[in-house]
Length: 348
Image 1 (cartoon, rainbow, N blue to C red):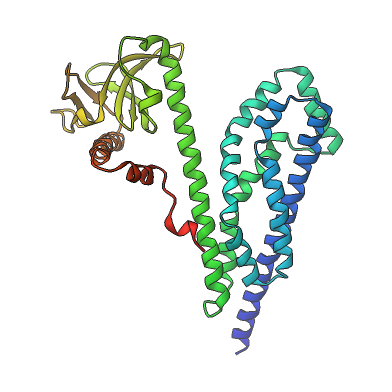
Image 2: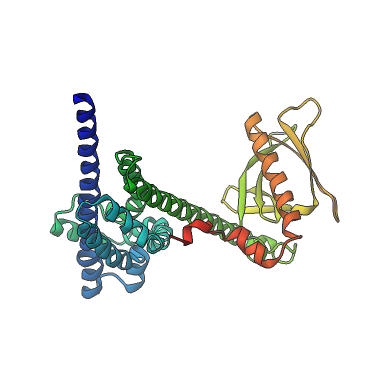
């Protein structure tokens, strides 16, 4: 009996510690947001030290996150350490957290913006001087990453809270439900970031090839391609030459990377016209790509490892399958496939 009592007591203590951690870390986080907004963003805007464009590029929608986080912290405080009320705070606000996806996408560019700003000695001195005045040892970038870290921590805190909440308590199912919502949110934000990165890469590819393509081919990456599946170098079997292979949602693009970083166009094969021959005699790491339409192209490519070959064949077969599926489904279904938000995420 005494052991059971000690175990229950220990669990209650740990649960209370997690509740304290949720509240105290949220309060600390909101205080940091306040410093970023008031002592950097608003200060520089008021003093007209950095341009409005640079401020927007650096800080994104952090003001929106700060305003929301202040309200959310107040709601957590009003929960009075009650597990049910804390879970309700997350469930009530779970859709509002989606504003973090905009910030996370923008944050990927903030390092580039900081680097550009720091190229000016005057701007560098301004930033360092402000950090010194505020007593900040960490760089501005270290503060700007805080919202990214926070949004990906909520589900971990709720997981800990669920672990110390008895299965027999009504609280447990609510905490698990809140945890599930925040896990889905983290996945949506991660997928949004990945899609944005890939879209950015497609834009980069198009810019690098623009002056080479001109009227030589009808490849239009900007209009036709909205998803990047894979990209990498493969050897031409039997030689030491490399080709840069790019798998987009509706085509295979084969280029050669020049020393200056530009891509020299070789050819492209539409997804529906690709035939993949997986086995090449006497070369287990090679596979052949053949075009079935127009001027027929054939490339025998070699991977470095067996796992690499498996990956490329899998991705090539996937785009063929996706292309055949897309040709037989409606526009509404297409939107649902590529812009999917889990059904349960939109409901309480």
